[in-house]
Length: 194
Image (cartoon, rainbow, N blue to C red; front, side, top):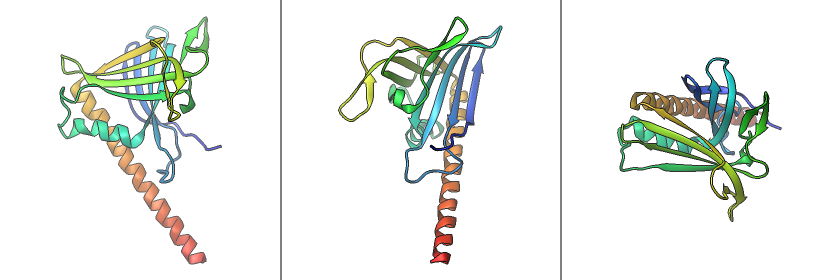
């Protein structure tokens, strides 16, 4: 089993809500594997700092970097509309809620998650993550089966959106460079031995 790290790429904290983006893979970009970032949406009690509910959402690193990159280039507008990403419980980390002091799964059985990103009328970027019952589609992707059971909505200002997008973009570029350097270093060692 692979080692999972917990590198926080970026975090935005509001009193009662938290959005963090994490990298759970090792320090190098895996050129042969799927590279995921985890968006973690948390609602908590600001008085006690105890978690009310948490919905993690895994998304492909290249896909989210390209999508949010439109913000930093100024190409993102209301005309792009809302974009939806899908993920399921196979992505590790179930959505949980606090029930009588214990963390319990929000959904029993196959869990689907959906994250939607867009701009509202005020110009704020809105991230909405939903969790509900799921079904396995023809391509193996877990899709929603019915209405969402729970959700968390998180809005960020245009300035915060640029900072988030730049943090993800910069982290992704740095990680790819580390991966390429490691790949070259390993190939050079193999050639010296051969």
